[in-house]
Image 1: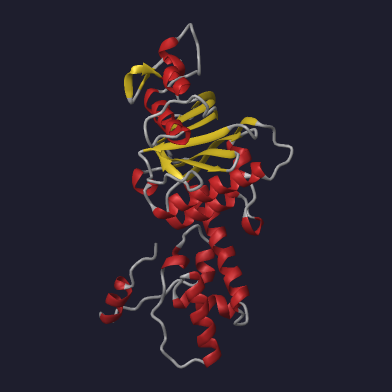
Image 2 (image 1 turned 90 degrees about the vertical axis):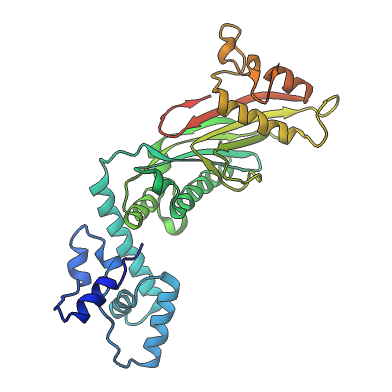
Length: 323
């Protein structure tokens, strides 16, 4: 995210006069230059305490020496206050950037699936380009949003069992660490990544004690553990009950692995209902199973001792959820 020092060094070697930007001038505009551009550091000796504070702040924040030096100067060499000041400035610049990019199209992005205990979340986060969607910072942001959504439902004693859709505005208002909302977090990342990012709606499932949850994304992010974030352009959640007595499955298969296979089918075949005699083509239980077309999904579920109770399917940029 930080620009190279090369242009500054080249200008110095060529003896071309340069006037570095000051924090004052940068903060009065929507530019994020203060986060990226640093004047050549003066090598004059500094007190040992100041050097120690400077090194500590730079290690904690990752900002350049000149920016850390400015932050310490504004806060009487107090590292904690300087770090807080830097976060506040970054947040302000993020919101300025977010306002500037607000109207730009966000048709790309990722869907995230996260399941913890009896709560599952299917989250959408959009951006302008596929390049940013593959960015590690973007994936981390998606993970944080999914984690906070799961935590919100899991800790809410009044949250009813079943499926709930949280609107974009409600998602934006969810509060995380340090009292910041998810809208603040997104704005901060817009300032750092430099591309418009938009929150999507979130689908939550809170399961009853006898109900199990499964989820899958495609292309698969590689995480078989559902408590870790799975992410891709397509995703599905499944709520089901399991009766192992009398179940017949191939060696090594369990209700957990079979549920994931059904999620794979849901992503691939896009059913719109669990069972609908008037529309068997789009009815999950009546569809030919994706991984064995000689059998129906209903037959696979029955012999595996699985009863499908609910499901959700989504794909990036569609703005609708099949449930």
